[in-house]
Length: 127
Image (cartoon, rainbow, N blue to C red; front, side, top):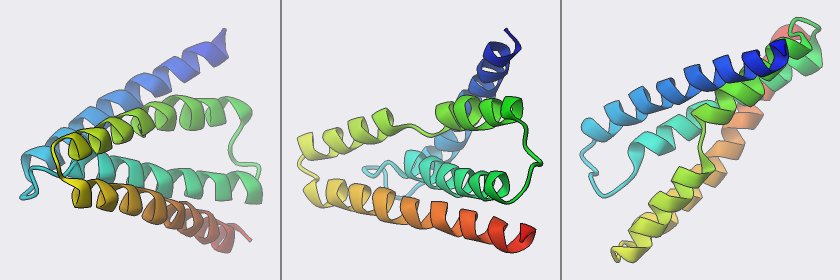
């Protein structure tokens, strides 16, 4: 039961954090037709999951329960593939094909780079 509660707690924190951060960037973006907020959220989430994965692989600092809280709950609700996909579809539907392609390219390429950067940085710190 505690594991379910930890996932739920992490999910609440992640979802609220995503809302705040995405809303901030959407409200302060000069690129109104581009989903900057979700891009930022997903890239930050990629960096954080890479860092946490690096810590998990290099140490025993993070228990199974904390992994559930952070990976499944917090980061699972913080990052959002469905919103990214919906935003990209909306860009295409609105005739903004270059924006859509840029959204996919930035999200995937920089996202993978951010995971690798976070992972390697934690390996360097803990090894």
